Amino acid sequence: MKIRFVGAKNIITKSNIPGIDYVINPYIGCQHGCVYCYAEFMKRFTNHKGDIWGNFLDIKQYPFEKIQPEKYNNKTILLSSVTDPYIPLELKYQNTKKILEHLLGTKAIISILTKSKYAMRDINLFKEFDNLEFGISIFSLNENFTRIIEPIASKPMERLDLIKEIHKHGIKTYVFISPFFPQLTDFKKIIEYSVEFTDFFMFENLNFRPYNIHRINNIIKKDYPYLMNIYKEFQNDDENWELIKEDIIHYCENKGIQYSIEFHHGGFSKKKKK
Ligand code: SF4
Image (tube, rainbow, N blue to C red; front, side, top):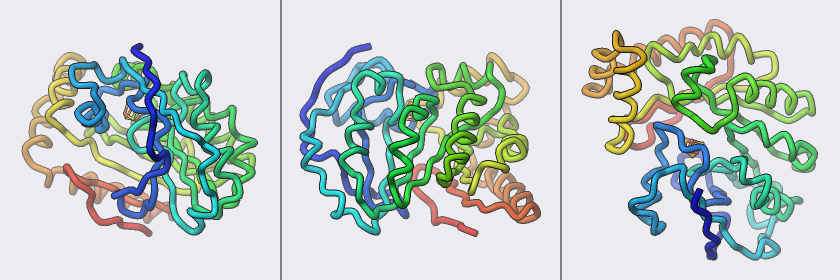
């Protein structure tokens, strides 16, 4: 892992994600190195051309005491969008923790999203915020498959145990079923397992990008060759997602589950919130 310390002009930056006013990315790069990761484009803007995503991490240096919690009152802040706030190296460098400590007192809606069991460390800190919601992203309960796709992230059951525990502490929780792998993501199974301790569910499709498409295809070809034609169809025509969307809507409406579908194909589509 190539580690650098880099000065940051801002640590809480304006967001172009629909429904999110600000984002916090405590690090540049992400130790998790997920096969499909959409944040890999960051390499171009951060002097990491030629580096392998997942093999470098820039620790942002910022005078955290400059954070003004009241500046974000009534705004929504996502932590994080192009890294994971609880990568294993957070235990050492603690940027996420320091940022949250300096945000205490804000009336912002803070949404934390992770794939890491290490968020357990900060439960007491989360409880000090008026409006904090905590989410995990997960696409399968199959440990072998997730290990191939998300090699460093916590196991699916560890993530689910994490939000179960966080929910027990009275914190609002959500499960982000993402990225949705056609024929392989059993969203009903994930919901059935987690509905008791999850306040709402979100769904995002698998996006095929120039830098991830070959990696995804190689894995499907090797481990699920009978699905290769289906994956090619999804890559050629976004309309294939419509049936999956309908299935999600039908299931969630029938079960009275609060959900939103964030399917997009290169950009962001409009929110469909219940
Ligand atoms: S955890 Fe998120 S940001 Fe990190 S590599 Fe995986 S998908 Fe990318």
